[in-house]
Image (tube, rainbow, N blue to C red; front, top):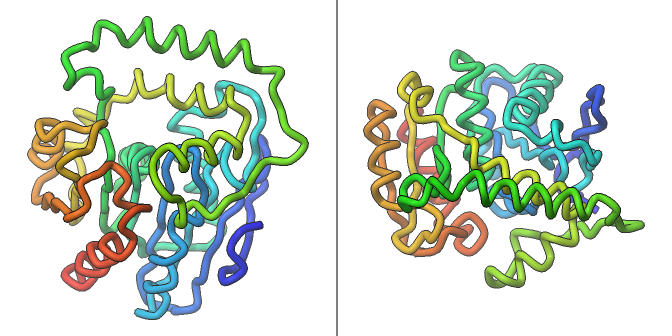
Length: 276
């Protein structure tokens, strides 16, 4: 399990082990930290990590809590944004990384927002791919449904607490073909209750004010037919983050990070080259 091309490591937290995969072979060079999306794992970034290494960038990609090899404890309080942010910070401290760019894809983008809000002085650059900064219901003008939807999802999660597998599937997410195929595989990688808790948590995300404090070079990647993020939201994010650039890729789905890895790594490399 995992990607044998990169070193597999972990941190031991009071709430279980968090695994990550890295190659930090280039002293003095920047590190690119890559955060995957919901129901995925670090293999979202297999190809980008290989290319970044060829360009002599250090790379690190965790299996977020509840995903991949990392802890899957069935405790709802462990799947809140500050916990994910703290896991990431403990990894950064363990590896003594002090010059890094944060790349957050979808759910990973929200963790990036949380991390840079808590540790603004540590991040040197930010790339957001298909990432909401608030509950998407707000831009769909149905925010009044959020408490009802979150309540139903949490009730369903509670009803599924009994569900478990002897082994959880660890699949190569970067090779996923199509949305529903990806969803089907993703639901085999973790207890369904954990997946639902993280979905219900979307009702409470709100980085509207905190992102105004972001001062580092930033890129916002948004696809024209992203069903989860409106153009109005992307414009608001770009307006809030001073100097942020919007990039609209050729791929028109929410899943550019997996469906168009060549285009994704090109965006990342262009950002790094311009930043240097």
